[in-house]
Length: 80
Image (cartoon, rainbow, N blue to C red; front, side, top):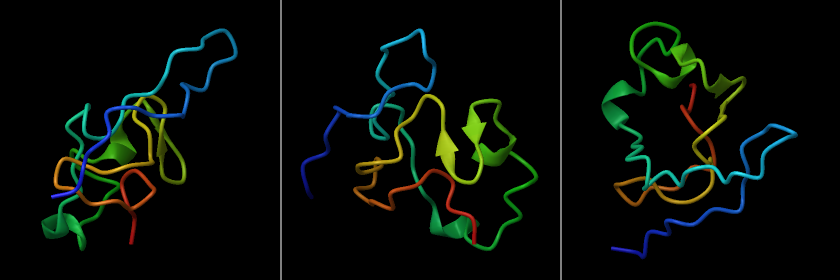
């Protein structure tokens, strides 16, 4: 297993703040192959979250680094 970093260089997109986003592993984010063919526009997916920024970013979780399973995709909620 590779070393999972809990640090991030990305910041929450708001002019008045300097708060850092949460790393995927800190937020307990995970990409699941079981949902690769699902309709991400319905149900409990990132797309329906108020913090989701189209096309595939999050306002509070970084899209860099590894998820809790050690996978690195560079995006949030990979839409296929």
